[in-house]
Image 1 (cartoon, protein in one colour):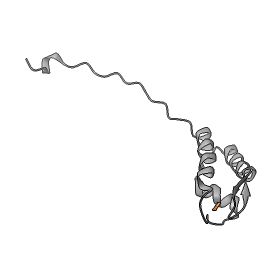
Image 2 (cartoon, helix red, strand yellow):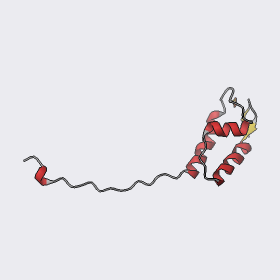
Image 3 (cartoon, rainbow, N blue to C red):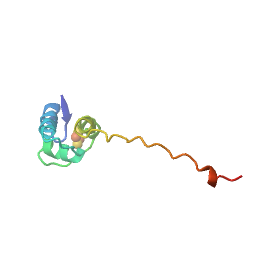
Image 4 (cartoon, rainbow, N blue to C red):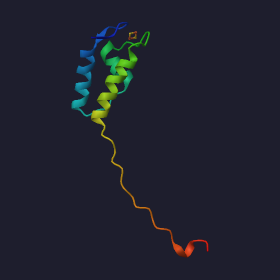
Amino acid sequence: MKVCLCNPFNDQSLKDYLNKMEKDNQPVRVKDAYKACSGAEKPNCAKCIPMVREFVEEHNEKVTPLIPVKQVECPQPNPALSPA
Ligand code: FES
């Protein structure tokens, strides 16, 4: 499937690039993915950018796991400090 028509590349080129970055566990920026797949060209019409972004976001979710939230107990109010 064609991704970009202005600087032609297809989804396989994008997947190959993202797979390479996944092996290094590296998150990717949309502009870097575009640059790598387009032969260092800049987007022209940018109609393909949402599709590139979709692939990149999926990749980044795989390589950058969410930071676990630590459960913290709230301290109990001190009755000595409460207004009477
Ligand atoms: S379709 Fe990719 S820049 Fe135009």
